[in-house]
Length: 102
Image 1 (cartoon, rainbow, N blue to C red):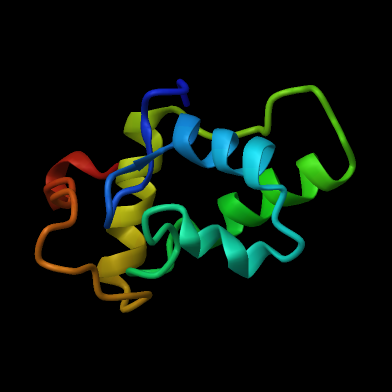
Image 2: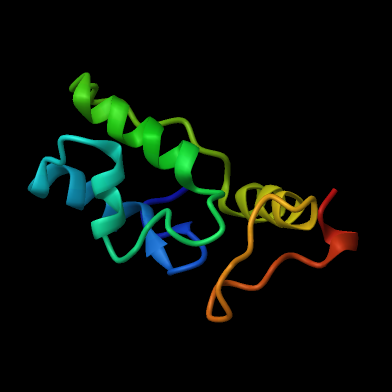
């Protein structure tokens, strides 16, 4: 995942926005990342990834958090939603068509 790719597909929050929020605001709990434009408060798909970024920052790791490519991330989220994992808001990034989500 590139820095300008969306991490929270429900509220269009990029990886860069979350990384900057963590760096500048220095949240004490992962739940505080929701203050970054609502990240993690939609379907819930991005929460594990937000937790990884938060934990990496808490450990003061400089390496990049291991995230899938933007396309793989969107396909995985679409499968998650189709399986009943969460309900995105109407303004969320559209799901990948089922025939594309291999």
